Image (cartoon, rainbow, N blue to C red; front, side):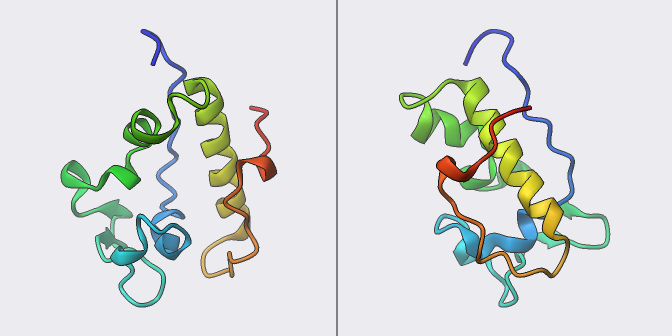
Length: 109
């Protein structure tokens, strides 16, 4: 990543934590209803935040899997687009129609 990278601006909406079944890397954390078993819904936070898996760390995912394929800025924009898609659906909406393909992501800020 560059010395002053575009930050990933997580809004802490926790929509990704409510849909862990969408990714193979996080599906094992499903408590049975699609929600991460580590999500504390009382304070909308992660009970294992400091020890959360790499799949829950945007910067780590980039370093491990995407650094050779795209710039950090592009990766952040793709992730932000995915976040907007999840947020637009709202809590409890079916997300199976969302494609995991980066080709379907709006990469404009």
